[in-house]
Length: 377
Image 1 (spheres, rainbow, N blue to C red):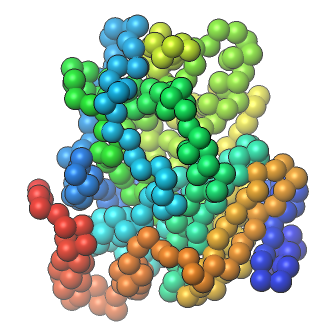
Image 2: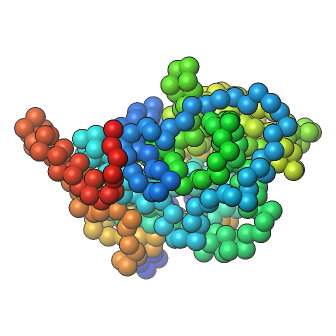
Image 3: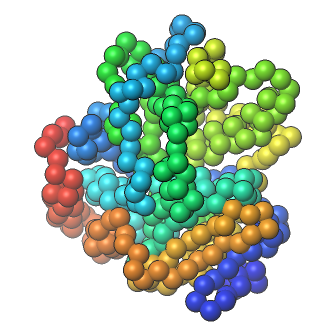
């Protein structure tokens, strides 16, 4: 039975934020399934994919404070931020295929970016978001999209905003390539693909990983934040920054966070380390995991209950505390992935022992052809 807060208006289906908040309070979700890595991929400077860890870097704690995050800004190689499809799903499918993984029991497939948005709906309701929704063969793909407002913001970005964005990428380079003089290129990436669940919803997520702790091989998230100078600053850090850190790291199973504190000029004044599992305790007066997980569980149910196989939609939140989430049919929306490959991965094999080798060969060849790789390990 569908919860009574799913209100249909013509072709569009609406979930009111007030109803979402009330339902999330009743149907509480306190934790997610422990993320389990299924596959991974690296993307080189020239855009080539390889389904390995060649772009995963080791974490090196900066030993010298006073480092200037502005160094190299003029040579920065940024991503294309003008596109409406900033994170194609195709590499996720190809990576899963290269590891002979199946999506047979999975309900949702997405980049972490979309779940960051879903989990912040009630805790940061002033930030609107948008994503495309494709339902094929029972699996729901959430495809990253940017709102028109976000695209306009990128067009209006001035040097100060661009420089502050660069600081985060420069900190990543300092923590992973401390002696490097090469320009920062944020098109180089390493992504992990994990299986987890929220409530009854089984999910496969892809997440970009900054680096790995050499001592135990576990992933590390790198962040920057303005230096804390007052009790108010400390509260804001706990309420907003810690929540953002926790959401991103918790979803992907990243146990460590290294935060570089910087002043208004972009000078590093200190580095502090956090364990992801400790953050809810440290920020308890301001938020708890259920603040994010419970509404996300309800939104996933809303999507599942109001989409049908073979159809495409836009999911849109208008960024108002008293607003609504809209699920709008969008038959002309173009997916960023090969639907045939998705259906192949999602269809269960009748006899895995006899068909796995053949399926593996087909999927691997398809992955190679699509990614046009020239180097493999």
